Length: 402
Image (cartoon, rainbow, N blue to C red; front, side):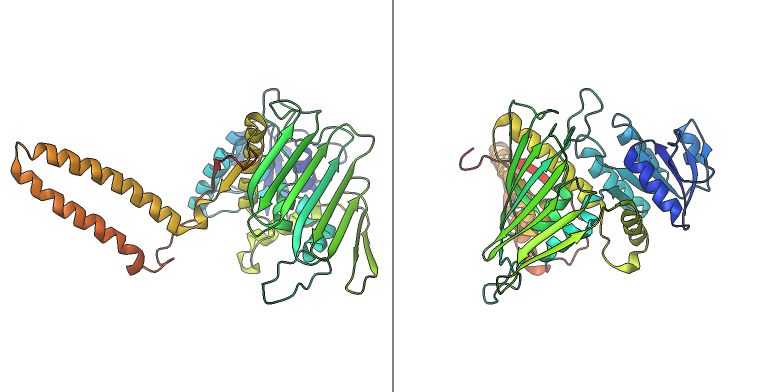
């Protein structure tokens, strides 16, 4: 596939080089000068983003521009009906992610987020130890049924992302990893020194997964050395995954098996870009099954970023309610709105019927129509009408201790 690179974000440059090195993709043009170490062959340099989109030979666009212009670049690339890859975060709020999902649905092209951490083989191995057995079936995992995921993430510099532009809201890394290990996050609480999430300061996160189990995350910037530690605690024990030199360095996983013998697995330093390139190719080939990454991962990450920032500002726990999780909830909400409108309409008709009595006869048909709508949920089986997945809507709620 022939693609173009827009911007010079390091993640975008690394992925572009990895795609070229496969021999199956060709980088035709870029809008910024490539670093000296980039091995992308001969690449045409262009100064105008629109010039890239005007080239019919470009089949995909890799968006790696600065945060301030990244949303506009993403929107324009999708409107050009190309496959699009976009570095994370796409924006400081989830609105552009919702809009991008709608545009992608119209064009049918692939929209791929650059979220490499969750593809690490050590993290995928840890995910295999997560067990949620049914009540009548014992846990098959050596650590038992999942209860808690504790994460400590330290960096020699900043831990938060999206800090290079003054005034931009920071982004929390690792939401895709949490969701891969524990499931959808339904409750988020964040705590910082001040009333805003800022760079250079520690950040504490806690919350709950939809399938049961809790998580807690400590983000520690400006430490003596990078370190990433994940502890998976269950009813029968725990497993620990340690990255002593950062997430691209060596990894060590330890746990105890069913007979109490301590087990250990290790991985050498790992480059995520070839794996991310394979994940993109898998997304291009819809016949290979569910892709390892989808735009839904980006949507969730931006929503959870927003929820964490609001939690810090308002000192409250945020509840994440996903609209597509329950058709019954959506039906009840719609009927509530219709019922309220009907009551106001009946009241208006009663007042007018004092002067025009014939209008009063319209009240009975309105009531019959409303009662008939209530039977639709029984006449039409669930899922009979095809509909696109709705974007989740985060709503703020106060927890018990909020």
